[in-house]
Each structure stands twice: as structure tokens, then as C-alpha cells.
Image 1 (tube, rainbow, N blue to C red):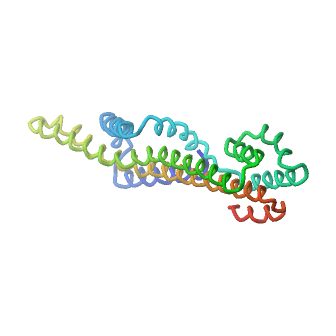
Image 2: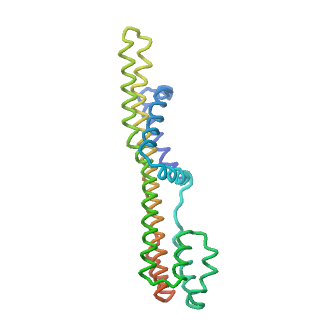
Image 3: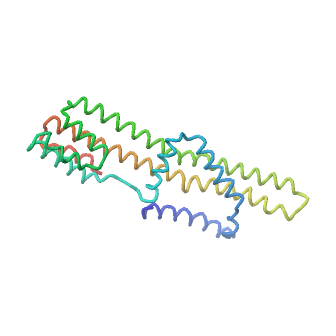
Length: 246
């Protein structure tokens, strides 16, 4: 996880634990195994239940971005597209074949192949836009898995609170059992709300930002390829694509 994300998470936890401490509480008062099982297990189960298999698989693939965020390097991409334009102007479109063979990015490789095959601008745009929109939709659906967990967690926390209160009601005649039941009731609510707002919803939003950056990157590649197909000057292409730089 990048330093800024860690800082944000740390600030949230310090505020939560610090406020609890200032109120005279302790960390032990926030540790409750049954409440954790109810909230974390119930939240995960509900999210898995609502998520199609392909979206769940993609959500797991995107999870690595939570630890190591991935954002496209737009400046390097501009230089790469300009290099393609220079090669196409000097050697013709067939001169891009060796470049396409070495290209590792799937979208860029497809764009180059469409260009080399002599497709017109409209055909290239149509094919690449379908690819771009479909990938963006798949990734947004995957990020929605974490967003759905953020939506379920507070409700599952309330369910945990009700379960705790049920146990309290059953043991009103035994004061020794009242404390654990009340603890489950209140701690489960805290777990649900904190889990959603300090972790799950921020994760979902951060993944959506990463997905949006990917889509913008692919849009830039699309515009560059179309400019090459129309025979624009490499300098003109570079000037146009620099508008995409953050």
C-alpha cells in the first residue's frame, strides 16, 4: 500500500482508538471475537453471494492494486506513441510490425495490429472503443465487489448487535452473562461501521480511480493510433497527446 494510503488509514485508526482512550476506554474493550466473526464473515458472505464468478475473479486480480497501486505512466506512453509515428513516417505502417511483436501491453498491441493491417480510422476507432468500454465496465464491476462489502458491513454490524441483545435478554437473571452480550452488541456495530468507512469504501473508490486512469490511458493510445492512421505529423501528435498528461 502506498504511503499516502497508509497515512490515511493510520489517521483514521488513531482517531478511533484515540477517541476511545480519551473516553476512558481501552483497546481490550474493542476486541471481541464473536463480533468480528459475525461482521467480517457475514459481510464477505453477502458480497460473494451477490457477485458473479467472473466479477469475483477480477476483483481478486485487482486486489493487488490495494497493496501496490498501479497508475499508467502517461508521459512514457506519449513518447512511445510519438516513436510509433516516427517509425510509420520513415518506414511505412509495415515498419511497425517489429514494434507490435515486442509490445507487452495488450491494448497497445491490438491497436498496432489494427493499424498495420490497413484498417481505416473508423474501423480502428470502433474496435478499440469496444475493447476500452468493455474492459472499463469489467473493472468497475470488480471494484463494485468492495463497494458492496462497504454497504453490507454496517447492516451486518446491526445484526450482530441484535444477536448480542438477544443473548442479553435471555440472561437477565444472570448478571455475569450480561457483560459479554452487551459487548457483542456494541462492538459489532463499531466493527461494521468502521470496517465499511475506514477500509472497504475507500478501497473501492481508490480502485475506481485506478480503473478511470486506465481508461484515460487507453483513450490516449486510441487517439494516438488514429492520428498515425491519418498521417499526422509526429510533433502534432505529441502536442495533442500531452493534453492527457496529469
